Amino acid sequence: MKILITGGAGFIGSNLCEHFVGKGHDVTCLDNLSTGFLRNIEPLKEAPNFRFLQGDIRDLDTCREAVKGRDVVLHEAALGSVPRSINDPINTNANNIDGFLNMLVAARDEGVKRFVYAASSSTYGDSKELPKVEHHIGRPLSPYAITKFVNELYANVFSSLYGLETIGLRYFNVFGRRQDPNGAYAAVIPLWVKALIHHESPFINGDGSYSRDFTYIDNVIQANELAATVSKEEIVKRSTLYNMDLPANAPLDLVFNVAYGGNTTLIDLYNCLRENLAKFDPEIAGIEPTFRANRAGDIPHSQASILKAQRVLGYQPKFDARAGFAAACEWYWNNIR
Image (cartoon, rainbow, N blue to C red; front, side):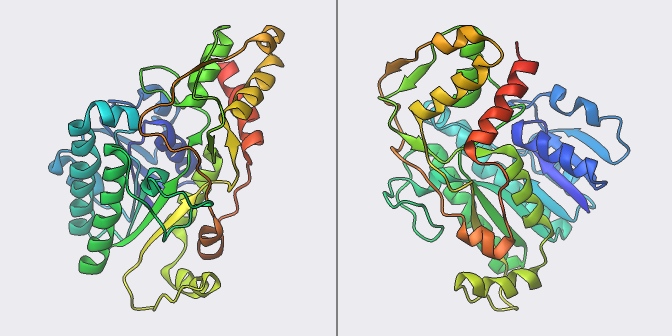
């Protein structure tokens, strides 16, 4: 395939670039390096089937250049983080909605066959239903969540009006190698791992009882590969397994949860990270966390139903949370000390 990966120098995007380049696909990586890093894709730059394009999805001409000759777009570029969106909703909107629309327009005009994009579990908002199923969402609780919901609406319109095949992957708390531990908006796992490695006490928001469906990066890679490669005919055939009637002539516009389907409290996460890192440095075993107030925009619990992705995409995640925590801790120990 000829693939465009936007945000390809970031955490998830660089792992996707590495995977698809390694499988022999022709990969173009687009990134403005605002939150991504050249070091993430440095090993790929000599590969004949890899091209790096530095540019911004907020510029339509850049998007048109990036999609030239591409069969599939894997759209990972976004300005992430709920707290960042609360502090700076204008930039979040510009990147996540204006940039997303630019990519849809460019993909449509180039005749791209399929547009796979990073959706988010934040779309479930204030819904208290557990586990989360794709067709039941609540009201968004942050500007970031609003932008991700709008992405799904735009994808639906472009599918129905223009025939662009769109698949949204609602990621649940993705973590793993190359997730940045630095900066004001670092995610919880790399932030805590970095603190523990440096013998510092990590902060836990709330009493540690909030829980998440932490999802290891290799599961996300699998979901993207399936979404990019499974034929529409196969999706239509499998849709009946999920009691979903998808006519063969209907536009392809689907959204799937991407997770393991588990549930880990923050205190259990902390204990697991500490236990894994203590294998490399026994002093870490004695470090206790510091508790503080809950964070604005956070929901108490999040857990995915992955039944739809399993039956329609053939998704079978290989890493549960604990296996992922162990792999991530080993990577960070070897790479960020």
